[in-house]
Structures are given as C-alpha cells and as structure tokens.
Length: 214
Image 1 (tube, rainbow, N blue to C red):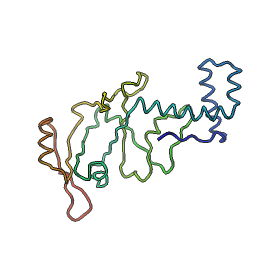
Image 2: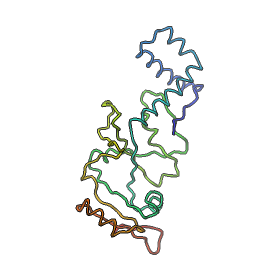
Image 3: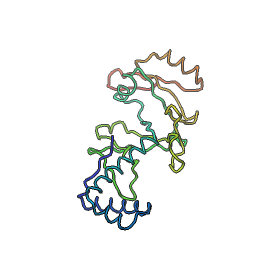
Image 4: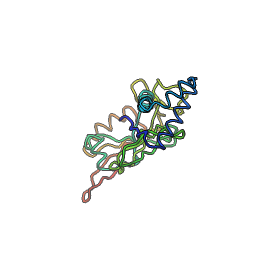
C-alpha cells in the first residue's frame, strides 16, 4: 500500500514539509534563487510532496522484507487463515536472540496511516500499521534487510536470495501441527531434518470453540 499524504493546505503539515524540503535543498547545494522559486511554487510543492513520500516507500519495498508473528498459537481464526484451515503447522521461536527479540509491535487504527514530514518521524511505522479489526492477532513484525540495503540501515539481520529470513538454528523452539493435518507424516518429516525439535499437536476442544496444544 502506498502511503497517504496529507494536504499541504494544512498549516502545520505545510510547515513540516517546507522545513523538510528546505533542509534537502540546502544539503544538495541548490542556489538561494532556485530554492526561493521552488518553495513558493504551490504546484511544485504538491508534486514534490507526493514524489518524496512514494520514494520513501519504494526504498522500503526494495530494501526490506516483512515477516509476521504472533504470541498466540491457539487462535482459531489464525489457524484457519494462515495454516490451510488447520491442515498446516505453526513455528514456535525463542525470543532471546537478536532476530526475534527485535520484532516490532504492530499498531491498530481505524484510519490509514499518513506519511509525516516531521524530522523525528520514522517512516518504518507505515509498515507496522493494520486495521483495528485485526487487533485480535496481537501481531509483531520483523523487518529484515535485503542484500540491496546498505550498511547505514540499523538492522543487523537479513533475508537470503530467496527472501527467506536468516535466523539462528537454535531460535526454532518447536513445531505445532494443526488438528486436521497428517500428524504422523509431518512429524516423521520433521524428525528427518531436525530430530532435536519438540513437535506438538493441536486438539479441538470438545465442548467449547477453542484449541488445546499438546
């Protein structure tokens, strides 16, 4: 989703953007005459505002990936949505490592997020916002770098050439198999690769709408 941009007719938004743009043109050694002309051209300001916000988002899409997590492993809806209607698996990770310990908490709002021009604004927040109706997921997100990101980006973890998250082997704590999955087949496959892993199974509760992990 491309970021929304608030109208520059708003006095506060306009002032924030002008401060941002002024700093940019000074850093690029634009002459005072050219800078004054640009900053007083309403159509130019509107164009630059939209272009700059989209450029920020394109930079994020090129340099980062998004991996979604939740502390809830027994939610009926999530097993239906993300695990092939209970036929799939859930990976359980330890958080005492730099990769999963650095996950960001998602914020839930009724309105779309807007790009801000404040100097203290972190555009990465745009990737950490979802609609309020998803709040039950209690989602966290990891934002690892691709091989296109430069060393200036703070995160020290990456994805590989196939966009798979690189994490410590010991970070994978256990695998939970869905209640409608072929437990024996999946367990056998897991133990061929990782006999050290704990494998658990989801069971439907008999008298309530709920799941138990055994």
